[in-house]
Image (cartoon, rainbow, N blue to C red; front, side, top):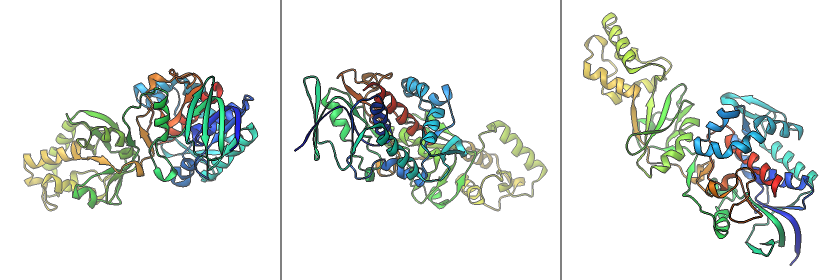
Length: 410
């Protein structure tokens, strides 16, 4: 079996690993990039429905805030050193023009994720890094000043190792979480992991009855066991035969999972109107238009099936009239419109999750270099770390920015 001696081995050819290999090799470091699959960049290929939502147009403190206070603070150096504008320039200079779409997302003009992967692989080749496909890492040991890594293609030793193997999400891409074990081997703490950015499972019949409906401009929030709001979103919501999907519900998935089956989702169908204002408006309509149906007070921005569902949930009938509307009935509909709570025990799991929440503890990895604080020469980046952001290119942006730091320092 062959033995290779290089400066840097990068394990995992996803967003973080590809960028780390490009940067390391561009510094003149002899670099090998190991990928367990035949095809590198599988997660990039399937992202955005095969179109690849590469990054976002958000920037600065607003960008950092999208990851939450703790994770955003950790990412500050990586994101400011390599913001979305820099990633866009990097990809466009590599031959893939990008364009902005809804929700501040950036996609290839070609609408083909494959173009991004091809461009990144060309950058790997031009940098001088050597890609080993079908080469899963089977073991890693420290021997004196070097690491010894075993693969089916042979043994390779290196002064520095970058672990960018990803988490547990989308196992069909080969994600098995094997990187966690290697990090543990070098003394790292792995915080509990959950699927994140996944559709939500909901057994309520009225939810499933609205399959195919998309809501815009509606607030949806995750509530913990005590009823406290942990995260709120006003982004598109899609009702499905299994529950709730679309950007807003998927953003809530990590928070829902953290509640271990006790989470609820709260809807506010008129987030721009205070409850008291709404009730007063309804009272005035009832006085002026008593012959109209109660349904007439519900906003026409909501699809008809949604309006009918809200009436049913509140115990009202389709033919109920404003003139005979009782105070209790009005209050029940008000509750349904402004504060409808639905038990949501879990998401659809890792098989449908775009990212993993949890991972290597952030206080054990230097945020300025991505080097382990426990083992010199070991760099950890990307989804392996306890980092996750919302839908919209934020997770790729973080992965590329962290991978760049690792490559510049390995």
